[in-house]
Length: 208
Ligand SMILES: [Mn+2]
Image 1 (spheres, protein in one colour):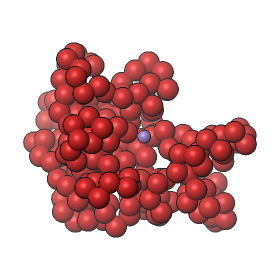
Image 2: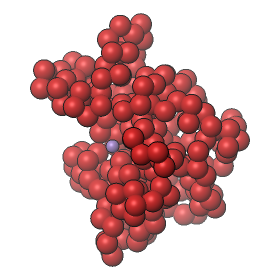
Image 3: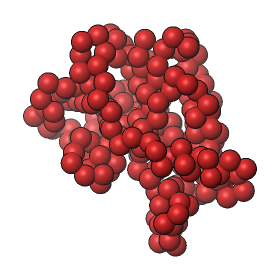
Image 4: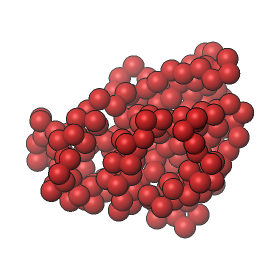
């Protein structure tokens, strides 16, 4: 089976609970739509875990991009500040002295901005923020609650990045026209937050 999740934001235990809930096995594939680090404390642990799994595919989120801008080869103090202001403190600390720091940064630098996949004859675009032409759109763009037009004709778009609480006030997957937002606020302060999993074979939703 093919699953998606997004925006784990350092909540390693909740991520483990989701994997148990969906009985994730080596026959399955999990696409993770970015933002595994920051806000929660265990982002680097989540990142290392995902990197070790052959059947987990991570996409770039704006938090992975901020981490790369702060620590990668073109780093500058303003990028560090920007990352810290966006909850990058724990991952910054964990990566500073990390024995695999270079390998982890190299892994991050190769993450795709979007993926087009087909599951049981249905076409999907997976992207962190919103489908668009530029990296800025794809990492930072957001759907609007009242949108009426499909973002991509012929494709169902799956995004994270925008907590569904901001669109509907609820911690459940948001269904817009030809687009689903699966970021249910994991890693945020909201006591009602959830980590969602979506099975693309039958569009069944799971929550941890
Ligand atoms: Mn994001």
